[in-house]
Length: 430
Image (cartoon, rainbow, N blue to C red; front, side, top):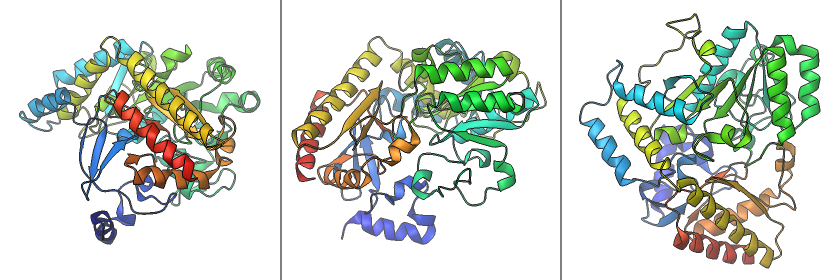
């Protein structure tokens, strides 16, 4: 019996579903989750000591590779002086200054401990700033598990959600709360124009994944982004870019630097913490000044600006700022996608790919999807079979067809060749 099976059976006795985040449970693909014992570079090892090439990289944060020696050293140095103070540190200032320098739209930033905390706080701030209640989100976009955002949400919720129009994607979310959340199709310009024409003066904020990664990788059209920016500016609504996933992952300045959009608020996480629990939200000083202790919008956190997480984040941002980092990361990811596409074509499998920076998506479909609805129409059964065939050969993909994948700078040419070779064998067995 596999040690993974033993651990999973044991875990289910004390942890709901045996996991501490739903997608890890392998519910969509079936089978037993792999319990990780260690990781290094582009690899991790499971409880049976089998090595896997990791293509989720902790769902994005490990952009410089697992256990990067420079990051480990920075964390060890910080840990020697205590794990947490509950008081300000110079490191927090340095990290804030670095973020503001890399993302000019961010004039001030507040540190928090998770992406959910960042988006939840940004929405509260937007409502406090505008004095309005309504928010707009888009189908298939996941912004953490705050109640008002769990409507037609992506990520693991696509596996579990009720498909009822505007129904909460989770139990325990009051319908009265959901009524303040308007859900529109991603990439639908006419829909957002119609809503603003009807209710523009009631809308506090529009929150969007500028490149969606929680219904697989979905890129927005230029017209869609331009419409959102123009309408939010026209009606005095706050545009919130949820770059928890894309920030420092698709480019050094995030998705906004590639798209030429200047959001009012930006949410960050994952890469900015280098794998430690760290996130942030920031933007225009005029809006950020409404936060306590300056304003009446309350937000606080015992571990906000945690010195160990700050140290990991600072070193990670230093590494990714080095010359040629993103050119290499982007080139390697594109090479991987090209190899997967060629392998699928060879076996006559309908298969499409997309990538940006160190983030990628692949789809068992004839075209690259551009919406939540299109993603749900891809061949999920083919994905499940492909997932397990790759897993058997030591390649760990996201255990859901609704999740983007991630590479790191440690995924070198040799690693890519091994992934493509495994895919070639897997496609031949579909």
